[in-house]
Image (cartoon, rainbow, N blue to C red; front, side, top):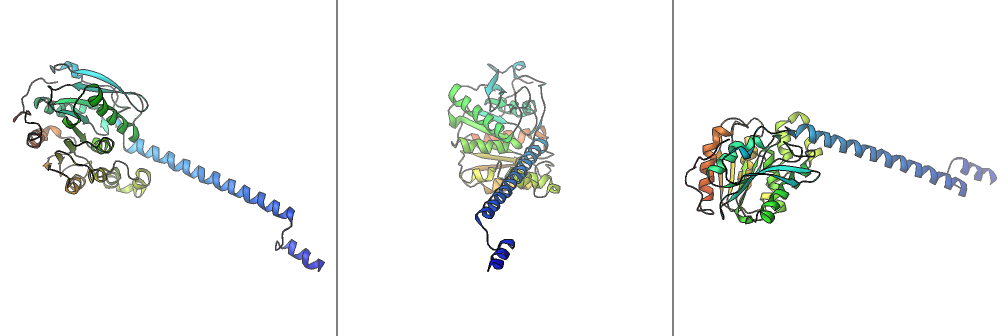
Length: 314
C-alpha cells in the first residue's frame, strides 16, 4: 500500500497540498508569460499599424506657397482653429448673406494650396469658402492621423455654424481624394441634410488601399479595418444633392471605387461627373465640375450664378 501511494505521488497522479501549491505557482507563471507575450504581440501590431498609416496614407507638405490674403476676395482672412493635438490653419472667405459656403477638404498629399483651382471655382460662383489644412499639413501644428483629420473637419464645421453663424443647410461639404473619406466621417458626426461633393474618392479607405497596393495583401484590412467607410455612411445619410466626380484614367484612386460609391447612394438626387486625365488634373475638369455645381445647386440656392463670374485670381 505504501509503495502504491509513493508511486502515485511520483507519477503525478496524486498531488499533496505542497505539490498542488507548486503547480498553481507554475500555472501563474505560465499565464504571466502568456499575457506578456500577447501584450508584446499587440504592441508590435499597433506599432506596425501606425507606421503603415503614416507611411502609406499621409504625405503632408509643410509651408505655403500662396495666401488667400493676396487675392481680391473681400474680407478674406487666415484662421487658426483648435485641433485634436494642435492648432490647424485655414483660409476663410465669406459669401453674401444666405449664400452657400463650401467646406473644402483636400487629399492626403500637399496642402491646401493644391485646392486653389477649386477655391476659385467656388469664388466665381459667389460661394464662400473655408479651406483647411489638417494637423501636420502646411502651417498647421501637430502630426497627421486619421483621427486628427476627422476632428479638424468637425471643428471647422462647428466654426462655420457656431462662430460664423452659417446655416448648416447652406454648407456644401466637398471632399477630394482622402478628403472624401474625411467628408464621410463629418457627415456621420454632423448628419444634417445639405449638398455634398465627392471628388476622386473611394468607398472605403481599406478598399482604396487594396486596389492601389495589391502587393500588401491582407495588411490594409488588418491595419485599417473599417476606416473611412463612406459607402456605409451614405447608406443612411440624405443630402439635398450629392455630386460625384471621377476620371476613368485616375491612377491613384480607381474609378470603379468612385463609380461604386455613386451607384450605392439612393437617398436623394445625385449627379455623376466623368472627369478626364489623372488624379491631379483638376484644371482639365474645372468646367465640368462648375456645370455640375450650377445644375445641382440651382434648386436649393437660386442665387448661384447660372454661369461662373471670374473675379480675383491668385
